[in-house]
Length: 101
Image (cartoon, rainbow, N blue to C red; front, side, top):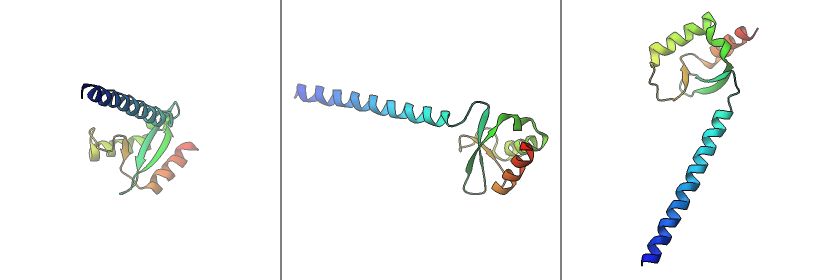
C-alpha cells in the first residue's frame, strides 16, 4: 500500500511539472506574438477581433479619443484582459489606415 501511494505521489508530481511547462509555453508563445514596439487591442461589437498596432498610434489625438472612450466604458478592470476599444471593426481599420499614412 505504501509503495502504491508513493507511485501515485510521483505521478502527480510529474503531471504538475508537465502542466506547468505547457502553461509556461503557452504564455511565452502568446507574448511573443506581439512584436516589440507594438500592442494588441481588441475591437468590435459582440465578437472582439484582435489587432496588433504600433505603440506610436497611442499618442495620436484621434486614437487618444478612442482610449478615453474605452476608459469611460470599460474602466481599468475589464474582464477581456487586454485593451478593448469601443468601436466597430470598420471604424478601427479606417482609423489605423489614416494613422499609417
